[in-house]
Image (tube, rainbow over all chains, first blue to last red):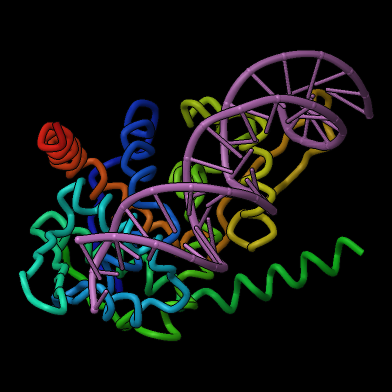
Length: 125
Length: 125
DNA sequence: CCGCATCCACCACGATACTG
DNA sequence: CAGTATCGTGGTGGATGCGG
């Protein structure tokens, strides 16, 4: 199912580079927000509704970080009530394939992982 | 360059599932360890040498977690001095394509991200 | 509707020292 | 060599309340 070519080996110094970026996108919500913004501009409230469990605070903070890193653009309309829309930038869109690849992997293997965890827990007793 | 098809939308309940797995693989070292074990059984010390900056403690903890989740297998040989080898399981190997996809993305876009950060910092003053 | 400020609990992580 | 034990710390993220 997966077609891919990889260009790096992740050894030595490259490991450092990978870690630098991972520090920025591997927090609790970043990948989920990026994936949710795929192909769709969304308002703040819509985003929060589509991402179960995220708090207003973390949504704001994570969006700011994404904006700062140039992955998400923010557009505020001078209306009453206020309306703010978020969309992926070109760089942000480029993250979609690897992000969804990871999300797909997550959905496909969650059962195996939980089964292994349960078995491991048993062996410990 | 990217050929992919994705099977999920990451909406609502699926978001929860994705987050559950993300909680397990999105820490500071997991992806890097998995990527380093690609195609190569490695001893504890070799792993530590190939991953710059990781502490003995974090390597141990992360490997235990990976073992518990069924992504990595541990083999101890009764020798003196002791020798322990780690290798990916089948589930672990299935994580390689999405992990390398993310690593590639990281290497390709680190410059854009840092530039955007610098520009954002300037605007704030 | 959008989002910032504050307070606070937890734990991820690093440093260090010690063992089989 | 391959860990475990212990301690200290910064940061992440949740809850709540206010403000434009």
